[in-house]
Every structure is written in C-alpha cells, then in structure tokens.
Length: 579
Ligand code: HC1
Ligand code: SF4
Image (cartoon, rainbow, N blue to C red):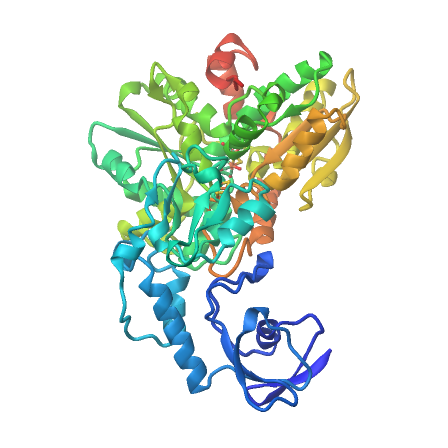
C-alpha cells in the first residue's frame, strides 16, 4: 500500500492498483469506455479515462490514461482540470467522428455506453462526422441469430476478450490499422461461416449497437395483428427471474405472473411455459440415458443448449455421437404445439404460430434448423430474446412492473415441476435428471431432493451419484462456459475421462446469464447469483419437484405419446446430429 492524493484528498492504495482502481475505491469518478473490470479488461484503446498526474519529484504534470497507469507513492492525481476535461471531450469527439451516429434508429438506443460517455465528458456538439469512414465497415448479416454492424464499433476489444477468454471460441480478431482498424471474424470469414456459435456473450459486453441479436419483434407484431393467426407463446425457465430488471424491479424478482399478464395484454391467444417442456425432456432424456448406461455407452452429453450443439458441430464433430438425441425443451414444445395442442384444443394447426421468448441468441438459430420442421413448417416460428421482448412491451406501452400478475389457465402445456424450473441455471438439467432417473430405477423418490453436489459456479464440476438398483453409481459432470467445455470435450475424445452423463451450457452460469438476456452497462453478468437463487427458490415453492410428477406430463403420455421413447415420442421429440 501507499499514499497519494486524488483531487486534493489523501488516498491510500494497494500495490497493484491502477489510478482508475484507486480512484474508484475512493469515490472519484473517471469516465471509461473500453475498460471492463469484471473481465479484467483494460486495453487502453478508447483513451477517455485521461487524468493529470504529477509524480513525486517531477517538475510538471503529465496527462495519462488512468486504466493502465499504476499508482505511485506521493503521486498527485487530478481528474477534472480544464485541460483534462478538454482532452476527454476531444477524445470522445474523435471516437464519434468514426462512428455511425444514426442513434435514433440504433438497436442500443437508450442503453449505449458511448452516449453515456459523451454526456459524462460534457460534449455538446460533434464537429466531425465522416460517413465515408463508417460505411467502409459493413454490416455482417450472415448469422441466423445476430447482426454485426461494424459502423457502430469503437474497437474496445471487449468482444474479442470474451470470445477468447471466457468462451475459448476465439472467433473474433482485431484487423487493420488506423482508419482501417476493425474487428473481424478469424480468417476473414463472414460470421455465418466462421467458428462463431451464436452464444451472444459478446453482445452482453458490447458498449454500443455494433453487436446485437437479429431483431424479429416486427414479425411477432404481424402475428399478433393477423386475425387468422393463433399465437402460442412459450417462455424460458430463466426469463422470469431476469426480466423484471428492465422495469426497475430488483434482480431475481420472479415476474412469471407479470409476463403472463403482459402476453395477454399484447393479445396472445395461448400462453404456455417452456418449463413444461423441460419436464418432458427429462422424461425422454432420462430414459434415453438409462438405456445407454445399460448398453455401456458413455458418456452422454445433454443437447438442450443450441450454442453447445453449434460448438460441437463446428469444432468437434467427432463428439456428436455422444450427444443426446432428445430435442431441447424449446423444440419439444414446438413439435407438440403443432400436433398435440391443436388436437386437444380443437385448433387448425396451419393457423398456429409458435413464438418463444428466450434469454438466448442461439435459440433463433436452433429454431431455423431444417431438422426441426414438420413437412417444411417450422415447429417454432420465431424466437425473441429477452431484450426484444422488452422492446416489444415498450413499443406497446406496457410497463411490466405496473401489471397485476396472473396465472396460466391451459390444462395441457403450462404446468411444471421444480425440476423443470431449475433448467435455467448450470447444474439444473443434471439435478432434474437425477431426481427422475432415481425414481425410475428404484420405484421410489430420492430422499434428499436438493442435490447440493451438483450446484455451484465452478466452470467444470463433477460428482458421483448413486442411482441404486441395476444402475448403481454414475459419474456426472457439469460444464458451463465454452472454455471449460472445450477442455472436457478434448478429454472425452482422448479417453481421459469416465463420465456417464455430462451437462453442457455454453454461457457461463447457464441460461440465467444467456447471451440473449438483459445486459448491464459497465458490468458482465452482475446479477448471476440473484437470478440463480431465484430459480432455486421457485423449485422450493413448487408443489411437485420431479418431472415425472407433473400431471400434465403424465396426461401427455397417457393421452398422446404412450410412454417415453415410444414411436411417436421418437418422431416428435428426438433428432440426430450428423457429422
Ligand atoms: Fe434455457 Fe432450456 S434451460 S436452454 O438454458 O433447456 O434459453 O432458461 O429455455 O430449450 O427449458 C434458454 C433457459 C431454455 C430450452 C429449457
Ligand atoms: Fe464469440 Fe459467442 Fe460472440 Fe460468436 S456469439 S463471436 S462465439 S462470443
């Protein structure tokens, strides 16, 4: 530790502190743009965090960037001299000169860190705009899930860092110099052709509108407006614990009832729950897994995360035979919504449109896959991310927080168990599967239903679970964040592991921190724990906590599917990933 002064106030600092860190800790604000402390990212490229320092014994002050200049004993730091303010303004003006300033139409309108910084530094006019510069950086619209609009990119490198360090995909690279500087996909590929798996984690850290989901709210409004269309909505397990934040509610507030009311207010015809389909997936995947264990085939990887499936297909196709054939809850839901639901409700299936709301960008990509169509018609017609759903409500003048919560009223595809609810967090699918597999093997319920060994935030967790009966002990692993997943896949392919069942979620934390969920300015996944705790609380509050105890799932098997892995179940709820 050492002593210095910031704006005339004595401060003590730690040996490793930069000026920015010491200033933050002592309550002195310095505007920043590229820096992101949560991922330890200080590339110093935006040069907005300028401060004036005078080192001990120095004759004259100098101007430096606070994010990457270390504190020194006896240093005098001043953050708001007229020269500092003038230089910060000039710096932001230069960034804006090289930025597409069509802010009113920008997807990030109102949630843009560049706009904030322009305000922080007191910029009142922008003297230079060079559309010819920004138009030399084109939009890449080749991904089915995302758009990269490079005219809005400020080269903060946060996306490169997240894709490389958090996800280990390393699809993004810095290219060119000076006016040609840009962020591109590796090997000069388009995003669609690149190694990008559409996880959307880079969108969560992008400070501007350069990275975003492919916006499909207009399609949903068309469906809602069309009197011939019957809209069927489903929403993801994690949506309800992360969505209230956008409307000023504390992180982790369960807004399930608000979402139901909001959808009805929008004019939705049928409001259902992906959690129901999560229970169904446990029935199918659990039985599939038990069959594979009896045959001695191991390991089996879960398949509900579409960015993981993309990752396997693009980077490790040899692992595909180990991926479960059970479709994801989103797709199982879609397949039943176009068959079982119309049969039960007496609806014309050709008039149905299934709309999902997911905290995920890759779900858009998943829903477009050819294997998830029946006679060429998509099982899920459109997927909105959490962010698009927020925009949709705002476009319709709906304040979620002011709504009276309501409940589901559909007797076919809305009820769920606690096991279905916990899908939304890392370890949840495994815990749900264990609850049901134990019951199938032993004919009685697991004594301690909350399997603590499976919970946690480490990127790879392992456990041994005794399933009893003719199965006995199974070795399981849970991986989240593709960096850990990559290591796991390489270990499996090299024969270095003996796991039976491996849960994979591409996004660190699982769906509660999905790449389509709400983002936070200046932070990466700040509400992960609160959202996750809320998911486990839903499990505790739900009267039935095992997927097989869900009465609507029981009814589905009795009246439609027969039993798990029946011919019809195979046809509607299973698929094959081909190398
Ligand atoms: Fe997920 Fe899933 S849990 S993938 O994380 O298996 O998006 O929430 O909907 O399909 O159920 C996401 C969440 C979601 C599916 C389920
Ligand atoms: Fe990388 Fe995921 Fe962004 Fe694709 S979506 S560039 S894989 S972080």
